[in-house]
Image: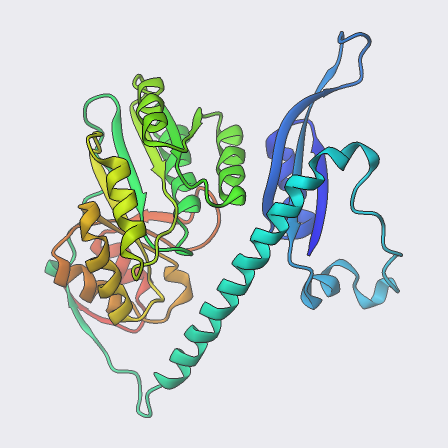
Length: 341
């Protein structure tokens, strides 16, 4: 794993440096504004620090040190003396990232194996999809604030989707937006959403208990929209899903969107949808449309559940890779299906 510290004049420039040097898959481990220089606290210049990490794979090494530029330079220390204060926290984060990496590798291997087994011997079967199969209902602002939670299994992209929604409502629609995260199991997820909130200039509340959640809602009561990011829950772990349900009990939620990945098997999508019924979700968001060649599973799930789709995402770019899940949008992204409008 490669970890690097970036310092810039503001959060947006720091994130741009992270993407340029470590790539778009880098994880934000720590971020903070600070002041540099000056005399006795006067005339200090505002700076922004980001600590980011990326898996130090061979492909990254090739990108960092092309063959025509000679051998890579000798390894440099990852930390300077002034960074020693964050080492204990970093060790915890590195351990967590290792666990996440192993889990992702296991899921990826399973997906590849499933994909290989699922390869048809005959040409791709066409699926007839009717417009009546798609109910579309994006976020609708009501009384102030409209409270919207995103729930779902791990790895479907809830945090990135929250950032996309927040940016679109705040920057393009001019709405006042607040963020709440109860995804405190993953330090990287909290820091990532904090970074987005800094860039978009939105308030964020980090919540650990149900009592804190109630207080966070009160702090954001003047906002037009409050978006809530939740920790991923396995559809096979009923206890974790019940814990999330109890967290929301007695607290007003206007909309609850179940986030699912479009590149998941139909039986797994249906199992997840059934397991999360306890949360009483009333919208569906499908992510990763860019990572599948067929949307038959997506439409079948939506048709069986009879629950409206709100949004689909088609990449990692914030805020652009998200669209309202209309029939025309689904049709555009489903190249191999046949549509009868």
